[in-house]
Amino acid sequence: MSNITDKLTELVMLEEEERQINDRLKAISKRKGELQEDILDNWADAGQQSATIGNFTIYVASDFVCGKRGGVETQHVCDVLERNGLGYLVAPSYNAGSLKSWVKEQRDSENPIPDDLEPLLNFQDIQRLRIRKK
Image (cartoon, rainbow, N blue to C red; front, side):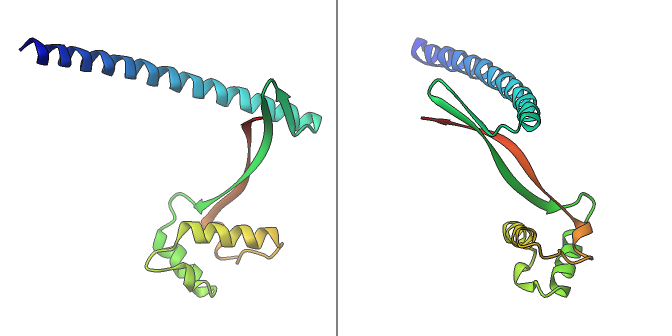
């Protein structure tokens, strides 16, 4: 009986440790987000794109995000895509990754997004810091 009690005790101890670690990771992530926001603002003002600290290079990366706006029905997006000759993005719902790629391609080549589709979507470049070990 003591063998199972020992295992249960160890399991509980590991659970407690895991919860503490997860709480610490959440705090670290929150602080990193605050620091990144401040650094990005500072670097934008200074025109800086990267820095090296110790064995790490910190740099600005741009991530393109695209998705339907809140409150917009998926079927409405599908209908508008089909109406604009983009039916290949729809089967039976639209493919979010393909739509993102298409919108990014249109934007990068300075082609307009159809007037009836653009109000249905949120898309933007988000600046984020990346950290790479040298």
